[in-house]
Image (cartoon, rainbow, N blue to C red; front, side, top):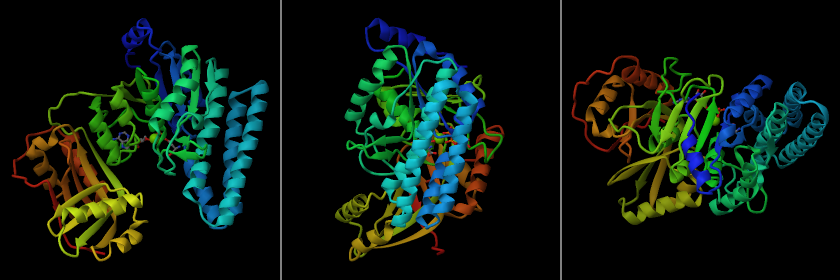
Amino acid sequence: MNDLPRQRNVENQAEGAPFAPVVMKFGGTSVQDAAALRRVSKLVKRRLELRPVLVISALAKVTDQLLSAGKLAAQGNEESAKGILQTLKQRHEHLVAELITGEEAAELAAFLQDEFQVAEKLLHSIATEGEISPRAQDHLLGLGESFSSRVAAVALRQLGLDTVFVDAKQCIITDAVHTQATPLWDDTNERLQEKVGPLVKAGQIPVLGGFMGSTRDGIPTTLGRGGSDYSAAILGAGLQACRIEIWTDVDGIMTTDPRLCPDARRVPRMNFQEAAELAYFGAKVLHPATLLPAKRRNIPVWVLNSKNPESNGTEIVADTDASGRVKAVTAKRGISVVDVEPVRWLAPELLREIFEVFEKHHHGLDLLSASPNSMSLLVSTTAGLPVIAEELKGLAHLRWENHKALVSLVGEKIRRRPEIASQVFSSVADIEMRMICQGASERNISFLVDEAQAEEAVRRLHKLFFSVQETQPEVVPFQGLCQAGGPWQS
Ligand code: ADP
Ligand code: ASP
Ligand code: MG
C-alpha cells in the first residue's frame, strides 16, 4: 500500500492544530458483502495512525434498485416496487447475520425493519402521486447509504475498530436543489467540526453514509449520482484532512475505462484540474465535483483499489509534469446538442438572456460553440428545453438532437501540441463529427459524435496513445478553438 504522509500529521500535532485525519471513502463494490467489509476493516487498520474517517456508499447496485422501485411505484406497479425492497431488505439482513452478533445484531435488525417501513411508505406515496418528485427521489435513494453506513459502522466495530456511526444528513447541509444539491459550506464545516471533529480527536473512527445530505430544514437531499466521492471531499475539506482516499474496484484512474479497453493502464499522477476534467467529461471513477474542495485546501486525493491495495493507485495533487502528454481518454454519453438561431443576430444581451433562461430552469450547459449567426450548446438532459424554447420565442429558435456523445482527451497542455489534435482527427477521420472543441482550458480536446460511435472512437484513440509506443505524429496544421457544423439528421 502506498506511503503514508506521516510528516504532515505530526506537524499538525506539534502546532497544536486538530489532527489532520485521512478520509477513506469505500464505493459500492468495496462494501458489497461480508468479504468486502472484512477487507475494509483490514485497510482501515493500516491507517489507524492517521485517524481515519470513513465514508460508505450504498452496497453495489442498491441505488439503481431503489430508483427502479421508485419508477415502478410511479407507474402504479407498487407490488413489484415492494418486491424490490423486500430483496434489498433480505440482502442487508444477510449481511448483518454474517458479520454481527449479539445485541447489536438485534438492534440493527430493528433499525432495518423501521427503515424499510419508511421506504414502503415512501413508495406508496409515490404510487399515489403517480410520479417521483425530485424531493421524494432524494429521500428514497439516500436510504441506500443510510442502510449501508449503519451496518458498516457496527460490522467494523465487531471486526475490531472503534467506529461510531454519524448521520451524514446532520453534517452535510445543502441547498434544496434536489438530486443535485450543493453544500452550504459554512453550515457544513461548522457541523463537521461539531459532530465529527471531537470523535477524531478522541481517537474514534466516525462512519458516515456518502451521497446524502439535508437542507437546513432537515429535508433529505443527494449530491448527484456517484456523489459519495464528493461527500469524502467535503469531509476532507471541512476536517482539513491530510489526504482523501477513494477506494474503488480498479487500480486507480486509468488511461480509459477498463471495461471498454481491458489494456487500460493506471495513471500514476494527475493534477486536480486534469482529474476534474476527466470526471466532468464522463469518467465514472470520480464524481466531477470531488476535486474542487480538495484543490481549494490542497489536499491530495488518492484513487485506490480495495481488492488490490498493493497497487500504488493514482495520486491527484496540485502540480504534476506538464509535458503535454495525453493522460486519458473518456466519453460522455447521453448528450444532446441544442442549436440556437437568433431571430436577428447573436448580440451580447441575447447571450445573457439565453443563459439567464437556462439558469432560471436549473438547466446545466456542458459546452458551447458560437459563430455570429448561431450557437450550439451541449446539454445532458432535454427535459426543460421545450419550456426554455417557448420562453426564448421571438428572440431565438431552438432545436435539438439527442443521442450524442462527447469524446475527450485530457492531459495538461495538450492543446499546446497541435500534432496531437491532427493525430486524433486522422485516426477517427471516418467517424462523423458534429462539433470539435479544444476546451476553454489547455488540457482538453473534445469532439461530438453519434452515441453509437463513441466506443469505437475511444478504442481507437486509446490504441493511438497508449497501446503502441507513442510516435511523433505527422504534423498537419490544425486551427480554430471550436468548429460547429454538419448536417442535422433528426
Ligand atoms: P465506486 O462504486 O467505487 O464508486 P464506480 O463504479 O462509481 O465505483 O467507479 C469505478 C468505475 O469507473 C470502474 O469500475 C470503471 O469501470 C469506471 N471508469 C470509467 N472511466 C475510468 C477511468 N478512466 N479510470 C478508472 N475507472 C474508470
Ligand atoms: N450510491 C450512490 C450512487 O450509486 C452514490 C455513490 O455510490 O457514490 O450514485
Ligand atoms: Mg462511484
